Amino acid sequence: MESPISQRCHHLLPSALLRALATGACACAGLLLSLASAAADAQRIEAGRAIAHDWYRGNCLACHQIPNDPQAETLADIGPPIVAMRERFPDRAQLRAQLWDPTVRNPLTFMPPFGKHGVLTEEEIDLVLDYIYQY
Image 1 (cartoon, rainbow, N blue to C red):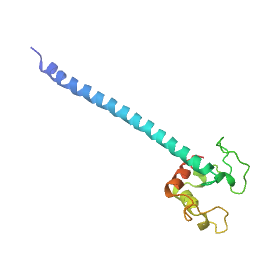
Image 2: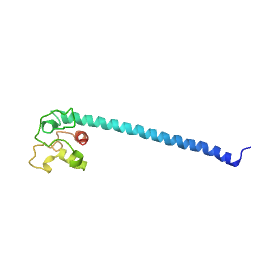
Image 3: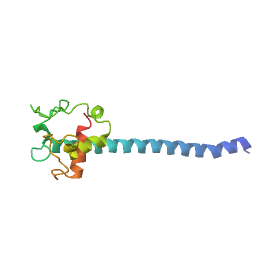
Image 4: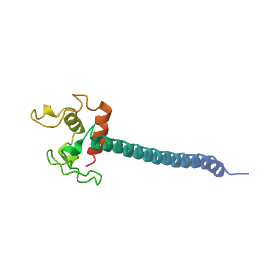
């Protein structure tokens, strides 16, 4: 015959085991979601790079250097280099607004208003933003 203590232990063991398994499953699911999110971010950054480097779309390299991107080969020096973007634009929305219509901050800029003139779609602007905001 089992003592009351061992009866309680039998009831606790499965529940403790289930909690441990559930905690482990949640941790694994969290890791998988984190990896999936990182992969999606990488895809967005690559898509943004493709637009930014495309002569017929973003064409950022016509005016800007991106020194930390080995694929960004250019001798351009019309616009400022794309570096320290998080420090220069701590509010990501300000950088997005700059891409959408830079004439708001500087009416004499040479930079085209990519959003205002429909050169890039809203999604394409967001992709370019994802790409350049990493620098």
